[in-house]
Image 1 (spheres, rainbow, N blue to C red):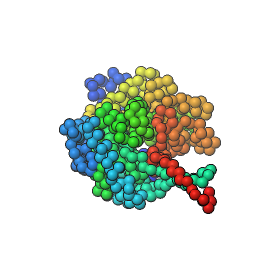
Image 2 (image 1 turned 180 degrees about the vertical axis):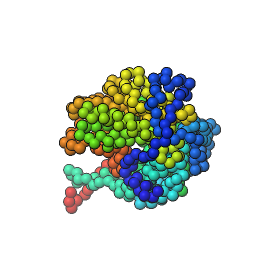
Image 3 (image 1 turned 60 degrees about the vertical axis):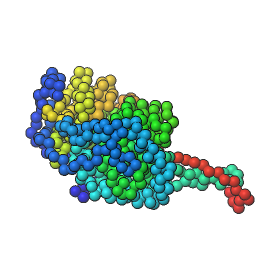
Image 4 (image 1 turned 90 degrees about the vertical axis):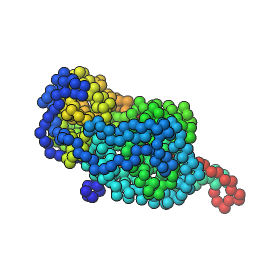
Length: 543
């Protein structure tokens, strides 16, 4: 276990492997529609491990709002259920934050910033608290991973061996920055002493998604706290449990009251209130492009607060004709199917050179049929359920669209089992650029394989999208790799790898995939204000 966790310095470097139990497919969808009526044949099955759900090895401890260091009920007294995506059953009822609760949380964060100790501590003192927090994350690794899996549906092995260790690594990374943030002294054309100060920006509002709840927490909370800011964080309504748990540990590590406040709730209420709040100085949001537009508008219409956006993607994964096809198939499989396909940067448009296209399709189909789908708490399972019924139904609609538009269904195409939100790993070949499945973000286990003939063609087609979050290239030719690296309009280009998320590597998109960068040194700029201080010099000895 310890050795596996050390691999997390380069997150998601490989997919989980497993054996293949017997196959099965479901006869009926959740709405009673026969699979055959949906255009799906039973030969498109996949490896499964669906049995009675395993009881999670953790108890839910925190379900209230966290405001000013205390767990409290929502002002309205309302709660909402957070569901187990394996079954659709209720895990717990969580306090539902609303406008009044956001106001209380912002007031606490404002007081903590204007009057509290956090921004007035030395960077070294803040660093020590963040380091203690990372130690506590490691101490409680297994409980946190179990909460994440239970609430989200991702494989426990992925959460425990990769994501939670990476969470701790990110916190140590930002702890290392806390006492190294400094300004400059710059020369002036005259007798003046000029300082450029980098100050904490103030109260940061942060809205995190449900697909990687804790990693997105770390991407936002880490740099904001390292720079001396205070925070109001809205946790996604689908996955509020882990954010509440780790925020309690953050206080245990020594974070002062009010420096972080956590409001579970819904976007149109709690999220909108946070985005439009006049006392919030900075906003960071991860989610869909359409919601990002709303967040940006609310921020502009209120106090013109700066906004960092990490939004959707439709990332190309380009397989050149010189590729080792077996290796390329495995990498492209991982690029798309990891985390149930619920990744903003998923390699969801797999472009394959015509010389290796047929071989690639056959081997991609075989790999999808071997993918083990089932209870994410079970050892060896590669794919758990989708997050909820809405996402489940959305993915099935996209699959139907692919069939109806003339793409060839090679594997999958149906739900798996009759309980929960499991979907078969699905492969489409003969996909055309104009098809809905090639243009829109599916956010599910659906791989679209497109054919291309030459380099200039694939560059043009790969860039013909409103998104620009990431891209992957698989080639043995250095000149080809260099050409594509510079030509692809994307914030990250992975060469012969995918989903490598080291703490120091900046992440963000071009075009409608967002603005700003998270992780690395660039993320600190999101939470710092720049101030110039100019003082006259009388009879200076030098300038």
